[in-house]
Figure: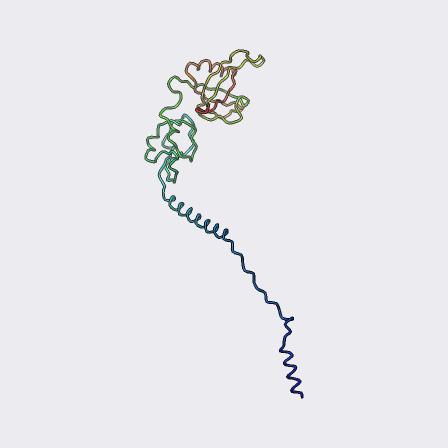
Length: 227
């Protein structure tokens, strides 16, 4: 009798109620996104192409002339002003080849040349100002007569005749002088800067008289080709 009771108890303990079983959790399957996969492959290919291009161009270097120090407009270039370096440069950028460096010495800066920049052929000339039929006239300018934007060498100006300080504006035609900036000096203790301008030889005396009296104003003209 006791044996029968133990057997029944064991059978009951081995039988698990289905309602009490732990639920089986099925991990959700990730949704495939073909667009993202395609974009990732395209980015990887683009990165590989860029890397190949950089490796190919890194060794494609050529010797060019570079400015070793600042050279103002109108100054004669010396060997100390130049140095040669190996760079990778776009073929569309105008440069002076390293082998032509000796021929640049003795030429004149046709613009303000900045240290560390590549020298372009158009930035040098065989002769500086003044040229034939030209004169250089210094004009003293206080801060009130200078434009807010800094004047640069080669900029075109009109020097306009002005009346005395207490006089009325002129009613007739005003005389003007077409000039270009050769160089701009630093301001002195009184804030007066002197700019050298290139003018026609016939305008030199009259322009110098305006510079002496200070009775003139400046008009900045557009660059050549934009007027």
